[in-house]
Every structure is written in structure tokens, then in C-alpha cells.
Image 1: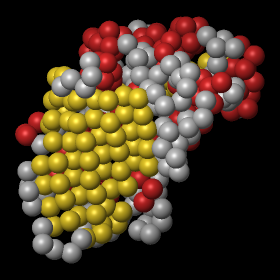
Image 2: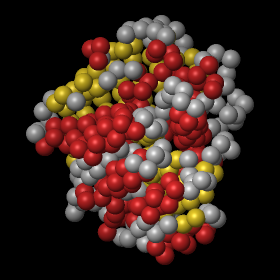
Image 3: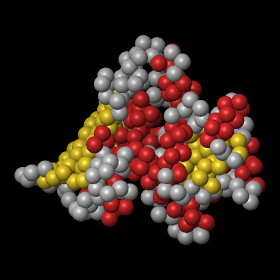
Image 4: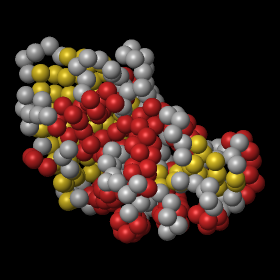
Length: 372
């Protein structure tokens, strides 16, 4: 399939990740892009990527690609948060499916508008909550679905980084600058950037929605305009309780995402830094360490793995699983077949936006319990 990308050019981290993930399985090739709001950087980035076509603006790109017989089959949105909605809207209105970076939009109103637009067009819209693509995350979900841990009582999920310990946004760091700017990032910094991943991972594995939260957001770096640390208490569907912690000022933690789930008969534990392992902890029994591609792994877990057991799979492969599922659905849509939606959808994105809004509001109200 022919793909296009908006954003992600020179100086951006996530654009290269999207490209590698989209092309990993040989099912798609990025041929066109509007890689920067600067026409010069956009053109230079397109040359570096060896793209067939480069555009000065996403509006021009959407119009041109939709009119071509060999135009793109889907577009990747890899811009700062404030552009997610207008870019996605421009392509959806031209009949082009979208794979969008998270969070879904800059504001909750924009997120609701996107949900409505996707519903009206019937097009595929995938959101890259990457961590749902890991094989052992899929395995954890399967074990919950099949009742192997019993009733969920408690979930602990944390996502800790340390890259914003210092005011990089004041030192010319492009990635730090937009992520700490409310005009570009939205109402939240840390919660919007990584807290949404933690919340999505919890709901994906457990199948239980977060019903209420009590949040405490902090800004530790002087002069920073958005939160860089947060902790929350959660109430889940079915009566379970949760604790969510996220931080971008956690000294020594590069990218520590982990989740522990405690059920009435067993527990599950997964850490991204050892992504090929899932710990299954039966009551009164020795812990069982499950490994990617092992004999005891479910069909869904095995389907997300590309390598023989013992060979590490990680972030790019998980990212690519989102793309593989989205591309499969784009083909189904073209054949007028039912979609399987084995990826985070626009509705998941709307929940993420609601999560951000309620977390900010709860913290502003001194930790009040609020309903999502």
C-alpha cells in the first residue's frame, strides 16, 4: 500500500519510528509527505527519505493525493497534538484513512468531532497506542479474557521517564519545547504524553474501563507550564481499584512502563524493559515466566510475534502490529468487508482525551473524585 505522512521530518523522533513500523512487514511504502511546516525542511526531509512527492502543506497534500489514480492509500499523522484534528480531518474528508499518533486531539471538542467524522465516513482510523502491540501484552489480555486470573481486584500501572528532569524546553530541544507548551500539547504535559499510554494499557489488558479517578498533578521544574509528574487513584468497572503513576522527572528511569494485575486466583506482571516475558502468578504456586513464542502462548499472543523464541522483540515490532492490523482493515474496507479493529480506535482516543481532561480537573480541585 502507498502511504503518506504529515509531520515527522528532520529533528523529530517519532516520524522515523512511524516509517519503520509502517514498512516493517513489507505491506506499505511511504511515498509522499508534508514533513514540516517549514517548506525548506519539508523538502530536505523528503529528499533524505527518498519520497516520490513532497508538499509544502498538508492541505495541498490531501487535495492532490485524493485526485491521483496512484495516490496514497492512507496517511500517517505524526505532528504535535494541536494539528492532529485538522490534519486528520483534511484527509478523512478526502476519503483517505488515517493512522494517528496519540493523544487523539488537542481538545476534547476536537476529539468528539473526529469520532463523528470517522463514523460518518466509515473509514479506518487507527491510533498508535503502541504498547498494545506487544506479544506478551496481547497474551496478558487473553489470560484475563479467559478467566485465568479470576476477578480483578487491583491494578498498578506506572510509566516513568527522566528526560525532562531539566528545562530542556529552554535549551533549544524541539521535542521538549512542544510537549511543554499548552498551545501545542494541550491541557496536560506528562499525563497527555505518557499517562494516556498507561491508562490505555490498563484498559486494554483488563477489559475494565476506568470509571472514576482522583488525581494529583505536579510541575517540578521551575518555569514549566504543564505537569511533569502525576499520580492517581482509580476505580474500575467490576469493583476493582487501580493506582496509576506517570513521571518525566523520575531520575534514572529512561522509559519504564510496567503493569501488575492482581486477581482473585492469579496475578500478571509485565515490564516493557523485559518485553518478551510475562509473569503469571498463581495463588500458592511458583511464579511462571511465560516467554514470547513459547508453547504455552495463546494464538493471539503468538500472532503478534515475528521472531523465534529467545530473540528480543520490542518497540518497533509492537508499533508495526498496529500498522499491520490497520492495513488489513483498510483492505477489508476496500472490499466492503466487516472491519476487525485489532488496534486502538478513534473511540479509544476519545477515552484518552476524557482521561486527560478529568485528571487535570481533579488535580485542580484538590484531588476530587471525578467520573470519566
